[in-house]
Image (cartoon, rainbow, N blue to C red):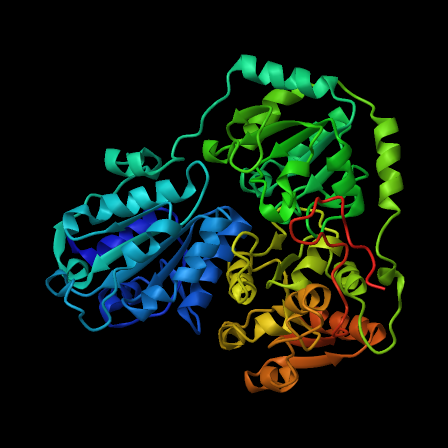
Length: 570
């Protein structure tokens, strides 16, 4: 059948199982939006307040489901407003497809109104991107984009379509089986992770022997465990081998916090138990982790006396930041399943006793019971007590994010969604929208800093319009807290441009959007307010007061070894 390029876009998205698109219309993409209007019974469109919010929503949709998230934007500023969201997805290996439209090909390169070379702009932050100048190529490009986005190490793909291509007609042949898509040689040559390597039986056997011979092993679980749906395999592996499990920030929720083998986050703001266990280990098993600088700090002193067994789907990560003694390149879940039968049931009681002693060392400030503010540890535990294990938790970036990663007791994978690699302030509210849309029967609680929430509070309009029952907890300490902490420790308490002693009033702002707003100035008030807000089943904003100088501890000063932790500021 002969259809327009715009109809091709819709038909190909339906082929790929897309049920929701996040976006914002504009002149160059109007043909596609017109076709979307005609097919609104097949695909739902969520209109956000800003294109960046749409990109983060598509990202949150992807992270919570494992499916590809889709975002639309028009040319020029519409397209560039996606850049931060695309970069965020790229750094955290989240599969999204961004579809933008451009000026007609006859106007390209002429500084035309709202023209931008968005493929050039996004080349470093996508797995691959395309400009489709011939409508005959459109269907194959869209199908390729989805394969690339979700294959190997997932990530974002961008498709830019000049306006006349969306209007041109072409013969279209529906694809009955999307799994039969063949990626072009050109695309494959530019993409480092389309195919997943499979370690040999000999490599698996060798790795098992190393694990069986270790006396002080530690697992370092990264976001790849969650992406590869390997959490159950990790639990079985760690239990059988009796190995303590630390996690990167992106790996939080990969392993149940209530399990005795869990030792918490590792790195700059890691627990004493995790950081010391990694330091004193004789084998560090890195699973789907990239050895970020926020984890390793001084690389020369990171697990310096330990063998490193690195398992990852992306060969580019092996030996990139930390030299591996041994490595297995492949899907983490598949590798663990092959290792488990070869692993001997172990008992590392002596090693775990040592780790138990390190567990007892933590900042004493978390024992305090403030009268006129809310203890962050209490805030996280209170939310969990009321919201339960199934609730999705999102954050922005800053102290509130680190407190959440440190103290929230995650029990299920994909329940913690945050910007780890890029550290994007403004990520969380859009992500929470995408997660709630994707999981309508499960609640989402968004823990935001007052600094970050200023960057995306316009999305309250989206939340109100679509009646999303999000509970937003604004951790209001009146400052850009993480930056202030560094100014306090390393810049002589010169608090340059970090004090937020001005509006808005979060309760009044929520009311302006028709959303319930609450204030909580102490722990008793917070417990009551959060319970009421959560049980209301409606969108709510809670202004939760936290002391301006409540620090995130432990912390490792920049460039120091991870065992050099600051535990007390007094």
